[in-house]
Structure formats: C-alpha cells, structure tokens
Image (cartoon, rainbow, N blue to C red; front, side, top):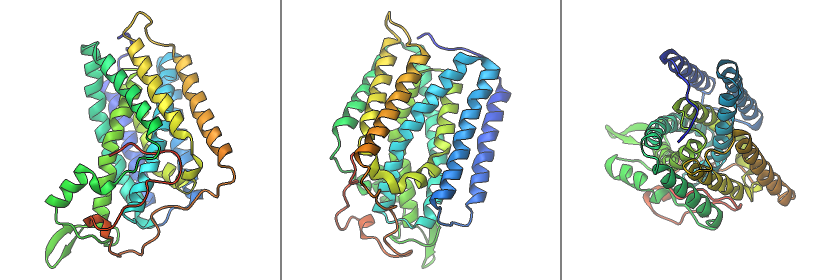
Length: 348
C-alpha cells in the first residue's frame, strides 16, 4: 500500500502529546465547578478546538509540505463528520440515564480520555496490519462499506444502553446504586463503596465509543496509514466532542438526513481503501477532500432545509432531579425511542 512516509522524531510525538494533555487540563480546570454549559460557552469552546485542529494543519504545511497537510485535513474532516454521530449517542445515553446537565461535561471529559486511548491502540494495530498484510485492506474496506450500508438502512432501529454487554457486566461485577450522588462516580453507602448511576452512564459512553473507534479509525486509515497523521487527526477531532455536543444537543432533530451523508463517507472510505491495493492505486487527496466536504455540506444542508420548520427539540438529560432513582438502570420499565430524527447511532 503506497502511502506518505516521513520521519517523525520522538520529541515531536512528545510535544504533540504534551499539547493534548495541556488542552485537556485547561478544559478540566475551566469546568471544574460542574456548571451547566450553555450554547454560547459551548460555541466559544468549539471554535477554540476547531481553530487548534486547523492550526495544526498549517504547522504540518510548514514542516512537511502541502501533501502531508492536505492528508491531515482530509482525515480531520472525516473524523469530525463521524464525531457528529457520537453526539447522537451521547444524547441517547444522557436521556436514558437522565444525567443532570451539570454533570454531563464531567462524563464526556473522562469519556474523551477513554476514546483517545481506544483510538491510539486501534491506530497502531490497524496501521501495522495494513502495512504487513495487503489483503487486510480488502477486509477493512468491506467492513466500511457494510457499516455505511447499515447506517443508511437502520433508520428506525432502537438502541438500548442498558443492554450493552459492557454495561451489564459492570453492573454485575461492581456494586451499583441506581441514583446520582452529586458529581461522584463512586460513593459509600453503609460503609460499602459502590458505583453511582453517573459511573454507569460513563461506562455506557465508553462502551459505545469503542464501537465508534473501530470504524472511524478504519475510515481514516483508508486515507493514510501514517500513524502520526491518523493519531493527530483523531485526537484533534475528538477533543472538541464535548463542546460539539452542547452546541448541537438541542438541534439534533434538525439533522434528519445526516446519516445518509455519513454512510456515503464510510462507503467511500471503504472503496478508497480497496482501490489502494488494485492497479487504480490511491485516489488523489484533493479528490478525497472534495468528496468529504461536498458530502458533509449536502447532507447537512438537505437536513436543515427539510426541517426548517422544526423547533429543534430540547436538550436531553434534564427531566429528573439530581438524586432521583432511575429504574431503567436496573432493567425495569421500557426505554425511550432512540430519537425522533432520522439519524440513528450505531448499535452498541
């Protein structure tokens, strides 16, 4: 598989990792008081994260030239687009477990850290497989095409966080109290340390993101197998997930046709990956950038025009008071519909 190859000194890896750690620390300090994040604050932070992600592409332009920079931007765009689907799942989980607004950022903060770890593992494993065994490109490509097809046709499927294998395993292994105890993940009841409902919600977020990590990493590996580019594009896209959620949570029903666009992107990535191991070879990066940008623009524009009379709905996760017991975490009651708009998250 022919691909970009450029040396990345260890100190560059260390510097980028330090920048990411500093940004996470700043974000944690800025939201240490568990306050409710409004649209204006979320929009400002989203602008900051996007600006940092775009600025890194300029750093690559100066350091390694236009082809490397364009490849990074293509990977960043496709990861940013796919991250919107994560937002839908966040909304589902927060609504299902009735997570109070003030604690949602804390759950997402630790969820993002877990997402970065998962992706780092998948990136190195996936890139190594593609480099060592050319036929894995066909497997990854077929997987992406199948995932895109499932996303396009699974519009009315419901997702039940309480049925997730990881969530069920945690509830069996870890003593759990089905209530919120402020912003704590663990607390003591009668001298016994137990997990709170907030921890169960965090596990649900991490478990579903594990599924997202597989196809999102596979999608960007279709663009490049440079572990440095794949990792940085993933990292800078994922870092803005929290702010993106609070920006879009009240507008989710407006994205009625976005899942078709995401399905096209996944299928395109799959075809691109397969073609890279045929006489056709790698598709040009400008073509890839154009397809990604056009698909995102058309699907979002189509959605907004089709739902222009929609009021946008309400931000999920605000219906219950802090500390109220939620029977659904113990399996009682019936879960709500996944969501009323067209885009459905991948089944956890």
